[in-house]
Length: 314
View (cartoon, one colour):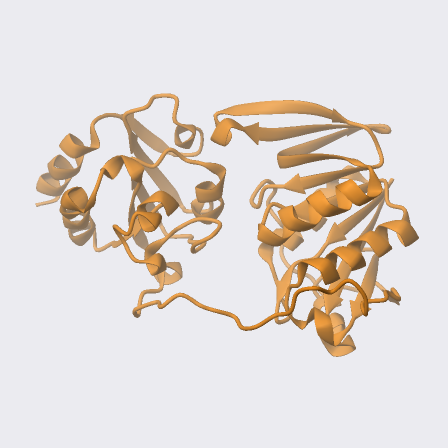
């Protein structure tokens, strides 16, 4: 079986999810090829040195310096046509979802998203995926050739090793149908906060209800010597600044302690904190997906438990 993996990177820094996809491809057996789209051959070579693949299929062009949907879609479609892989793997990210839908439509291949595991029995693939915000797991038989969009963290990537795969250039005409152009990268104001360095984090979710209840979580965080953080609904509501968001569209963290209050555990949030050493969840919904990830959990009223914990820590 031939597998093509779309490699995501920012300025040559390979995403963790790309290494995870390569590890998943290896677990399925067969030939693993990695598609690298970058601004020049030097960047391609640097990325290739990190990849555990049999072959690196490379497209080097100045237009690929920043992510442009049409340009990257053209590259992926051309790679699929030239290499004819049985399976294409992409990460569940902004770019991955963008490309997967487009290339599935162009190629006529069937696609499964939100995948957490892939099992192979000969020429038959069974894909496990999250549905309804992670509350249910679906099992889908995927006919080949097919496309799978995999949740980051679905498989643990091995330690990085020096890549030895040969690099093969893919010639792609990127001079047509490029209706969009990159203007600038906008980074959120961090306000001096770096959640990636925090050893302890107290994270609140939508169930907090508003900023008037925030002091309950902040008081506990202070006692623990922890940073306060929030899920995306909390940030979108303006209860905490963007720099304190944990999740796919926020910050990926790996603290020693991650205590969550009122966070349901949607896939987008789990992506950002699932590698924490110790996860404790407080939620009033006993069916909340977070209880499937937490090391310890309590079905409770967080507005009673938070001040009680704070008092206990004295």
